[in-house]
Image (cartoon, rainbow, N blue to C red; front, top):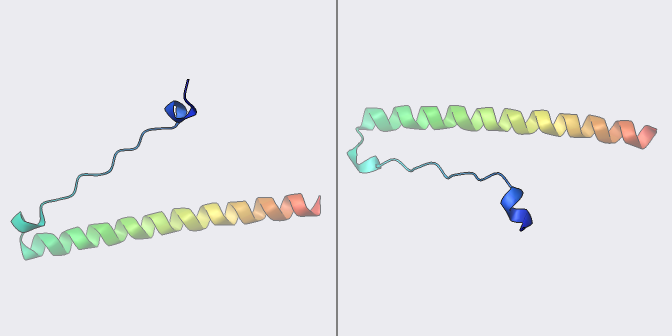
Amino acid sequence: MDWDDLDPKTKKPKLRDLETMSVEALNDYIADMEAEIARVRAAIDAKGSARSAAESFFKKS
C-alpha cells in the first residue's frame, strides 16, 4: 500500500469563465474572493497562535 493513498484528495475548484460574466458580476466575484481570502488568513492566524501557544508551553515545561 502506498502512503499517498491515505492522504485526503482535494480537488481544485473549477475556474469560472470570465468572458461570459458582466462587469458587475466580475466585481461581485472579486468581493467574494476577497472575503474568502480574509477567511483563510484568519484561519492561518488562528492556527499560528495555537502553534505558538503550544510551543511556548512545551519550552517552559
